[in-house]
View (tube, rainbow over the protein chains, first blue to last red):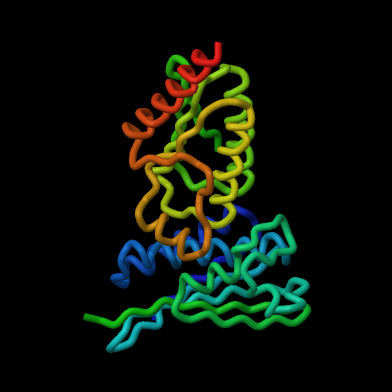
Length: 133
Length: 127
């Protein structure tokens, strides 16, 4: 099982993380649309780390099995947390720099999306999957 | 990372060929506005063919850059968006609103020329 861990501390780490995600998706056989969806989702989530938490980590894992190909991405930080997740998941809601589309937009790009946040620990897990042909 | 902005007679041409950090992108936005003002260009084409990720930050920045350029009185066309980038932006609920776009650089230049000509003939009619 392949796993890549990218420490997110600076803006340039956003680029490193989304490239790593795209590369893994491509190597596993995902098409260019899914590669771009995943890279964009990673870009959104890791930018949240830089904006809200300052630093965190992004772990990209190949979780393919006999029947499906799957890339799972875990984005984690020890920042202040999201006070109201339901509100954060509403289209158009954003507290910093008015991005708006961030979390709800990201959710629409991936097959799996899971978020959990308490003060001091926020974790978002996303995955793209595809049946093997 | 400095993105070159080329001058071709009365128009400007710039192509984003590398992955930009957020700060790079903001610097690019400032450079575009600065260059438009300095050269008194009639229009600018921004080529994004090489961008394989346009996330919500970059989409907003491109949108705002185009709006700012238009506010200065210069026409703008964004060209070369990758199909998977267009798909991802729409799925995310993002668009380039109020910005002229074109398939590629060739068409981008044609569209820009057309807009500038229309603007000039409108101006003449009023005179």
